[in-house]
Length: 127
Image (cartoon, rainbow, N blue to C red; front, side):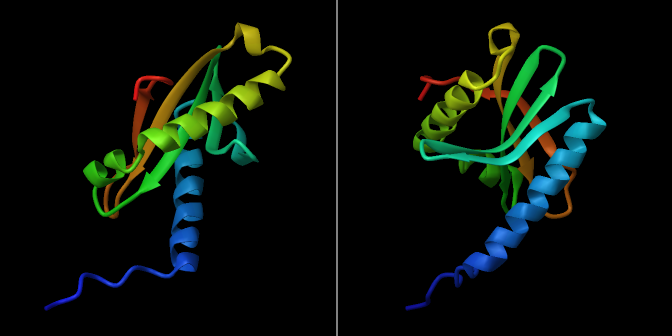
């Protein structure tokens, strides 16, 4: 019986995640977004990147995997609900929140590939 691949240590995954979030933030800035927050945390959830362009507030989940398909598939329903709860708290603290359009995006990263920004990747309550 052969064992599967050995999981990477947590510190390596965390460093890769932070590097991926920096790359994603830079990519978004090049696309004209203003980064409002990175790694925004609340007891109800965490948001990797909050970015604004015009009247759109994008809540962006960054995923780094071996391939884009694996990255896209790694954002599960429970995680989407936690992100949506955190976004609601963030918006409740913004004075101009009523005038903003909220959107949930994903930034998919894979080795040797350009970042892939998926706009409107999901909608709260859609699964």
